[in-house]
Amino acid sequence: MNNILISFGLAFLITFFAIPVIIEVARRKKLYDEPDERKVHKMVIPTLGGLGIFGGFILATLIGAPVGSIELQYFVAAAIVIFFLGIKDDILVLSAAKKFIGQLIAAGIIIKFGGVQIADMHGFLGITTIPPIASIVLTLFTVIVIINSFNLIDGVDGLAGSLGLLTSLVFGTYFFYAGQLLYSVMALSLAGSLVGFLMYNHSPAKIFMGDTGSLLIGLINSILVIKFINIAGSPTVPFPLEAAPAIGFAILIVPLFDTLRVFALRIFNSRSPFSPDRNHVHHFLLELGFSHQKVTLLCVSCNIGLLLIAYFLRSFGTTVVVGVLMAISCTFIAIIYYSRPKNKTTEVVNIDTKKQVVKYRKIATVVPKSVQVN
Image (cartoon, rainbow, N blue to C red; front, side):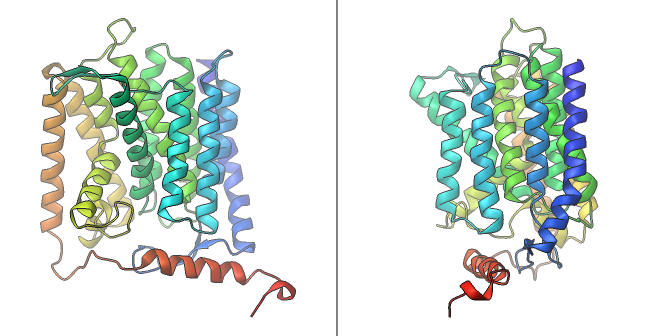
């Protein structure tokens, strides 16, 4: 218990006191996120909040983790890969292909060396044990989707941070009662960092977490949810849960369902699943006139509600619970989609190219004249 409290408190303090310094450095170096037609903010805002989240999480986890946690070194290694991937994208912009390759490397590390693998579907669609190759492919797909889910839901002040805080608190609490100290420390270290970050990210935000923060939240949640499914689905643990995969899905329901829905739409329209648009749930809610605070509150409330539904229906089995969650989510999305003003457009063209030009123009402003070329 002491390890958990120390980790949470230390992560909060490190992030809380690091963010003002990061904001000041970002302003001096002109490292801003500039508004465009796809984004909802109208002012230039620093994007390096993920630095503070990463620092608080890593230090608190390393200090609070129990001695002998061999897999922790691989989780930290994957987090470092994601950190450099995110920080480069926040400053210089990376192509979707390079980001995907970096995510594959991080996912490969936690699967191959960290033992993060889905080996049992616990009766979902009648499937139990999965062949080794299928298990690796399914786990890789799950990790990549979850990593990107928090990255894509990060479009409104406080939204990704609040959802990440909710999921990490739920996972941390479960792992504590299940006697899994390492994963409880990881979850609550992330929660402490996010509390510190959200002090500066509530609307109007003083700083954004950027890809550095959102990709890290996604990576850690992918580790936690897969471990949750494996541990909670075992009858030998202190706190077993029926329909563990469905409950794990419910914990991440808002970012995960929104990402799967948007990916499916993009592929159906013959576009890259990583191409940008305004088809996310928070865009729909903004078009309905919701403020940033109301969008965040509604999404978090829906996430909690669906989690409670999954928990109380768990005796019906994984397939039934997942079906109920999907039906409710699809109904909710359909209601807000068809309630929007009809003159709104959701297509954006050549955003990545424009963003790249803006970023490089911004960097050029801080290069000494002696090294500039015409």
